Length: 168
Image 1 (cartoon, rainbow, N blue to C red):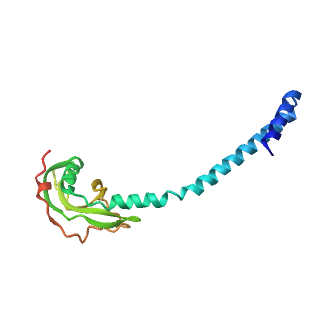
Image 2 (image 1 turned 30 degrees about the vertical axis):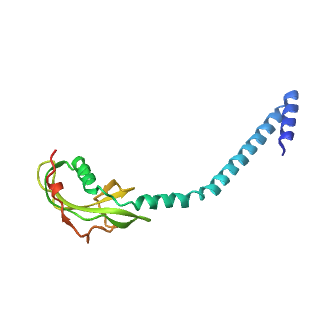
């Protein structure tokens, strides 16, 4: 139904103050609103695919930046992350390597350490993956569930004395 017809019916209904006209107008108005909503959903669905390739390319470009100050960034994080950052033992670190994380590749730095708990007892050696985005530290993954393969299991570790020298 055209807008001209809807406005004509509305004008005629206002003149007559007929109860049937107001119900009919509400039905037409609701029907038009439903059609406009449906068109908006269809347009959004059609446009949603437009940016995905660009967003994926941008994410891959950011993930491909080699972290330069990865040791300093990991030390700064560990200082706040560990309950007791003093006297960390057996600290090791691997060079940044590109690894598959989820559906894309990302730079990962593997870290192994033995830190104290809140009571001052050593908890045992623990592996962690420091993930980097755009060359900067993003977050640490240190909980490897049964369904997740620990990608740091075969890393080429080297001593990490900077982590062992942490102070509060």
